Length: 56
Ligand code: SF4
Ligand code: SF4
Image (tube, rainbow, N blue to C red; front, side, top):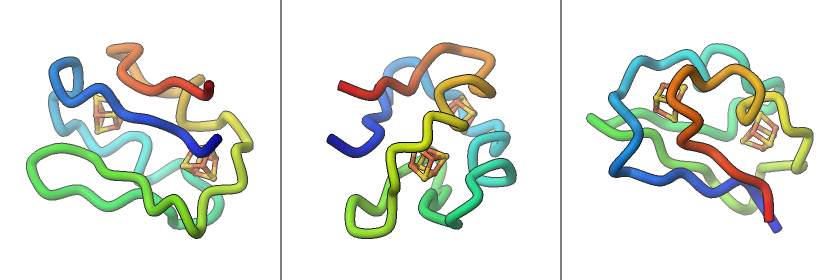
């Protein structure tokens, strides 16, 4: 499963967008993962300061 972002926890800081090696995350107020691009690497999960991202 691709990374999933809990919008209630995301504050739009942009860290995951900068750190995703695939460029799979877009930011429009809240971050959003493009499921077709995400390789499930887990980088965004590790860098999010609000623990808003999970890999299931
Ligand atoms: S790093 Fe976390 S809080 Fe920051 S934009 Fe990404 S999901 Fe939202
Ligand atoms: S799991 Fe990896 S490829 Fe997928 S959105 Fe997060 S950083 Fe990008």
